[in-house]
Length: 294
Image (cartoon, rainbow, N blue to C red; front, side, top):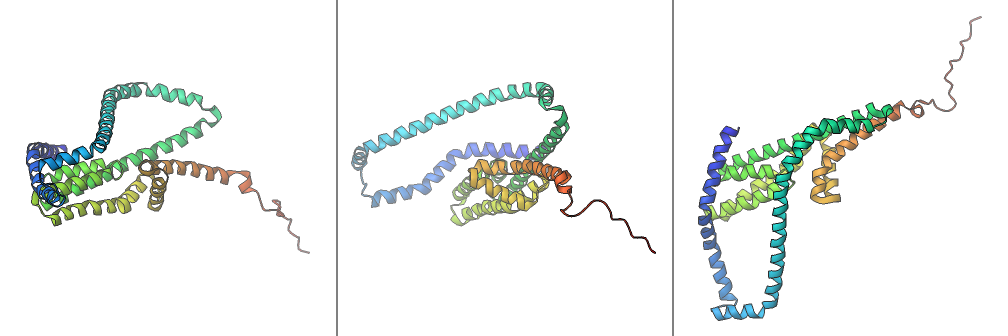
């Protein structure tokens, strides 16, 4: 798959970088008439009028500039933080992998010996559920990426394979991939053809893809991966969205799967308890002797 896709992606990325100035000028050609219309109908006919508007709104401009400076500073801090994470994460991952057996033995020794087997069994089941969730998310992302790339390529959209695969990969974060893909693909389609109908069809591809992913792919694939009914997956995602928004959507299924493991264990212990097996009041466990025939 890499031999087939990587050369295409590299070629499309290079073409997109080289064509970026053309797309910018093309977009300006579409936006220019709108700006002229605003100038004509807004009473802006000369440079002096523009200077007067700027002077009249100096305070507002200063406030906007201050806000933009804050946003830029926050963005710089975010980039610095991301760079540090990219440097530190591989080092931390190396030592975590190296020391992981010792960590597991240390955690195992903290569990009371009488309950050690039960706790380890529950933890192992939860681990399998979470691993299945990760595999399911990756499979959904691959299906969406291949689907988006294929449809956009067949529609003749420039850089359709690159945009489609990137949108599918970004779908690991709920709604991010579909939203980014819709905006970028629609903009490219509009600049490429100047036809709003074509741009609308491209946007419709991502809308339909999001509906299919939310109502069919995620419940079915994640349900099979974590051993949950698709209906429970659907309810878990809805509940996570209402409680914590996007983070809730991302964490809803693994949390529900872990709770399911604990619930199954609780039900099993309940059915094995003396309370569950206790006979009803008034009934005796001893059998009554049979009467002998005369």
